[in-house]
Length: 437
Ligand SMILES: [Mn+2]
Image 1 (tube, rainbow, N blue to C red):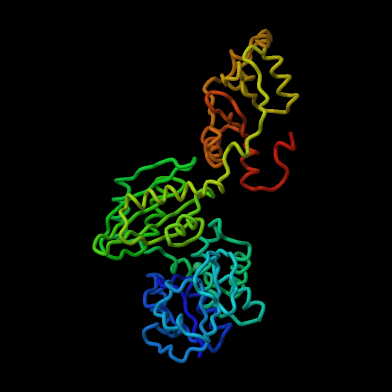
Image 2 (cartoon, rainbow, N blue to C red; image 1 turned 90 degrees about the vertical axis):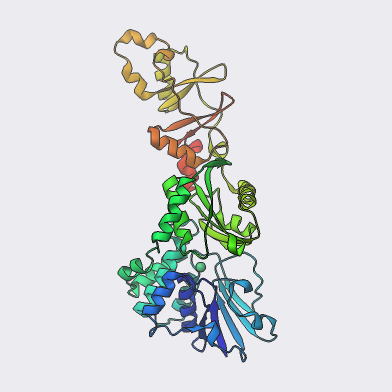
């Protein structure tokens, strides 16, 4: 007897992986945990006849010879499988896209970092030339879109997109998918979001704007992750954490969302005993005060610091600059010679202004070419600290429509970051601006 099962609070990726497993292993009986997430529950109630699923409660696992586990590698994420954990001679087959070390030790595994778990299984279905029906393709694609944020989470891989393309070829229905993935956002969720916004705060950790919101909730609330996602977007912070305390059950539910590389939610949540991806994740803490949870999160974000790239890592230096008594004609020649559109003006190490091509348009008569640049330079210079992130630099450049930012520490100019430095960091391809200059 062979069974296939997945994690509690089953999402579309998990359900899709279970269904994909029943194609790859035709003898396997699909067993779902008692608790599945609300969208999956709604899906199953409509598709009951098409996807026959068994609940862990209604199955006798006594004669089990083989268990296929998908989309998790931890026993405590499975529902009522403790009996099998103790047993000898049960073959365990694992399909998982999480690389964290779990306590399920499989006989055979396919474990690779991927945006969605079902991507791994679709690759195998293709290899074995298995037939995928349009309805199965729709479910599988919902799994990929949900786990990769429509292929926009940084954890998405090219393989996820290949799998998505294959599923579209198999006639996955995008109309159905958009209704399946509709976030369950109702009155309860709206009230929580309003209360979070009322007490909203922002802190800066290692150059990232982070918001942590502590709130008391009563009992189980669906779709808290959606609420935290909306909260992050409204506050326009790099990362947001909701610390939800449920006093009656003496526990904290922690949900995080991030839009920057420097704050890896998956790592933070793993540090709290939970899990997730770089962009999204959650954890549950028993008997922990919310203030303690907040401190733990801060420490864990700081622990991620090594991974974060800072301005000082991507800026150019030494900086070509001019003193403020250079005359306009000389400055124009130097700009042309260096091929720059703007140059910082520095007097005895201190940044006093910036001169750019547009400042030369202020010149009305020839005699002004002999005037010192200090008469024409802009003195309200936007600058950035070496500890900030390339993302912060890009935001400033876009906001003020400028192409370069002097990097300043203790009033001294230590470097300059240009639009192309920032872009090279984001795309990590092609020659760097330093090589071009
Ligand atoms: Mn998954």
